[in-house]
Image (cartoon, rainbow over all chains, first blue to last red; front, top):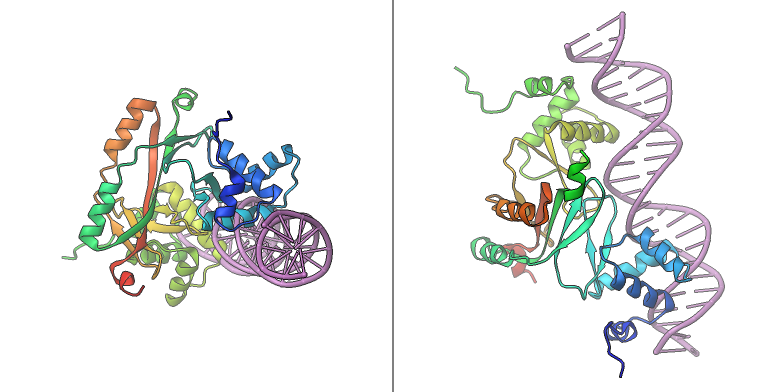
Amino acid sequence: MVVQVKHDCKIELHKVALKATPARLATLKVLEAASKPLDVATIKSKLKKDGINADPATIFRMMNSFSDKGLVREINLQESKLRYEYSAKEDHHHLLCESCGSIEDISDCNIETWEKELREKKGFMIKHHSLEFFGLCKNCQKLI
Amino acid sequence: MVVQVKHDCKIELHKVALKATPARLATLKVLEAASKPLDVATIKSKLKKDGINADPATIFRMMNSFSDKGLVREINLQESKLRYEYSAKEDHHHLLCESCGSIEDISDCNIETWEKELREKKGFMIKHHSLEFFGLCKNCQKLI
DNA sequence: ATGGTTGCAAACACTTTGCACATGA
DNA sequence: TCATGTGCAAAGTGTTTGCAACCAT
């Protein structure tokens, strides 16, 4: 019996009315396997290793439709570019080392309390938030 | 006796070893008067009203040096551009309405507790963080 | 006097778009 | 078959840079 560990990307695409093309299937696989949010250039090079030569424009288009359909999250880490992360992973935040560029996940976001407060006090309806931390990781602190 | 309400921009520039040019003085004044972080295009048009025609490149250069010297904070509100905010204002976060584009400040950030925890648990040295909320303001909720 | 500042034009990086061709359902 | 997806080239937007002229100190 085969255990279904990974999501079935074909079905996933079907659900959101997107055609299951090789580029899309491979991209979802790449994002699923990634340990941190990826930018378009990185996705492109990872796809190439899988034998798929996708144009940046195509990848941007995929990311936009995936993000519209909720398949990926757009991540803005104050760089001049966007990164994308597989949505199936639970929502979390990031810890960026400004020296080595490492990106670590932080889960356990208890910001909901805060959001509730904003709703009650200001009547603001929060749809999402961004919270990222920047600094130096344990290792890079030694090098300075 | 004259009460000193506003910062003396000339002195402020002097302190950080930047020359007090008309463009710089006017820009600091514009940022000080602003109720929300401004982008370069907006700064440019506000300067124009003050009779100063500054090139975007110049404004970007000013923002970079001001930000290096700690005179302004660079604000990234997940747009495709940066905004800048006068540093003398206490550190705070933002509440963005995705419908009308209004930007409200939120102060009272008790995230330090969290940062302390990250330092203790992961040995990560936080230098700064970004926290922004996106959603619908009270008013725009009615319109939907 | 002279080193920092500015304007202008060109270069850049990332992202979007138009269009013809290709392909999944 | 036919709407959808893709490659390629061009355009768009925000930002940076090189260089000569300019101006605060």
